[in-house]
Length: 337
Image (cartoon, rainbow, N blue to C red):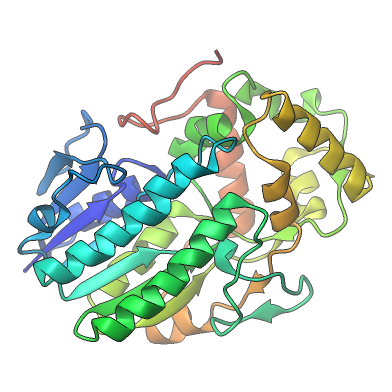
């Protein structure tokens, strides 16, 4: 039996990972770390209030006796203050890595991202050897790429720790709809607008071709990594790639070709006025992200997603329309405002 510690346990990915591990007969107990203790109480799960941005947090004490640490904690905002997200995402993650070594934890499963990859092709898929220098203008990609370098050093200095890096595509589920609306669209954008009858057209932007994955399918890969002896990076994505054609089919909206520059200017203006949390720099990065080849996850982890990308989008859009959420502070369904 094993004890697993999960950071960022109340967010989009964390709730799926904790739920799956709490149902796993091979797991004896789960310790979920989050800034705010949730009302949600899965079986075999304990909670501890932890802020990774705080230097006073004794993470080694939290990790004592763990068989694996799954590091998921991440702050997407404030996008106008990258120093704040750097303190949580980069410095906080480095504290996690150091505490894993100090506590003698044998395995670290880290949430990297497709956002760590350097710009790449949209008409072919790249494997895990593709460079991970990110898109330097976007804080999210810059931070994910920096942590890849930090883990390179950590693995060199601590070969006794088995390190796994998960690089998933964009992750969605019904319960994350309200949270992601607030993170990327802002708290004043109604999710009910994601209806065919309310969308006059869908912008068809050159280069908009990305991958998606159901969060529960990502959680399956984390569980498999915990119980195996694999090391290194794993791409995670569902088929088919998401482009304007698939989005138009899902939304039932007419596609209209629009120049990339015009859309970026609109995003930049809204972001500059603090009307839109998602920055134009992240928009630039999305248009440059490569498509990922997931052969290694299929062959070494025996991982297969249960949901297609089309099914993922349909579930997420219904969640947006319904204001769906979950019983944790990050995922709590909230009305606009």
